[in-house]
Amino acid sequence: MAKPRKVIITCAVTGAIHTPSMSKYLPVTASEIADAAIGAAKAGAAVVHLHARDPQDGRPDQSPEAFTPFLGVIKQASDCVVNITTGGAPTMTIEERVRPAETHRPEVASLNMGSMNFGLFPMLKRFPDLEHQWERDYVGNKNIIFNNSFGQIEYILSTLGPLGTKFEFECYDTAHLHNLKYFLDEGLVKGPLFIQTVFGLMGGTGAHPEDVMHMKRTADRLFGDQYRWSVLGAGKNQLPIAAMAAAMGGNVRVGLEDSLWVGPGQLARSNAEQVTKARQIIEGLGLELATPDEAREILELKGADQVGF
Image (cartoon, rainbow, N blue to C red):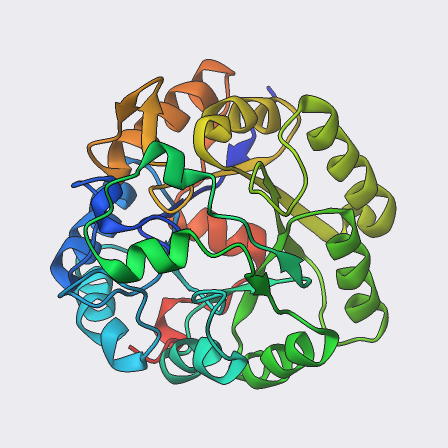
């Protein structure tokens, strides 16, 4: 009898895109981030993707010390795979962005695979009354270029690769897939590659089903059986794209980093609520959730006993 395919759910619990004034449910403090990650894992997320924030005003904080309080709590309470961002925020230097993962040596770190325009400013129409000046300045900035040059990508690979950390390769358009192919051909990365294709963020590819199909076809052609596919749909696209990818053989990412919503006009009250929605879709398709240890096996990770926290 054939066994159901295992699907990895990643949950990105807070990120650096949304700001605290947009939702009272967005985790900001270390304890809120820890609780969100643990709750997401209990709901079925095998992987939690983590950013840190200043507990006073919620701005992104990429100091290693900001990650320390919640990393230990999460590890004690859950066996989930921890994924630390190297994206940080697009306004940070590459040295700032890599320091938390370099310090804490997680099993997985995110890695953006190309430079791009980064347009958050359309959110100002939906959230005109942001509380903090930094939020208005950050979200309203029409001149953000998220800088991920070949040299910067190589810097992250050469810094974290020797630590045994593997990567969630975030690809916002097909050019990013071709960039990753270059690094694979050069021997700077090796399979299985965990490729997170991103849809619906202004500056990247769209969120139409044809966009999803095109990214998948391109990845299949470039990487064959050397990769494991996952999708991230921004905003209202989160669950429709998750459903499409799960039906096509992929894994899914949800979380308040990517979308504040759980339905039309309905704020998600927790990351766990979004994980539960994704779980319902996956199990409704006759598939099963991967456990953390199954995710480690699928992605060939070093194991929780090899991290630095």
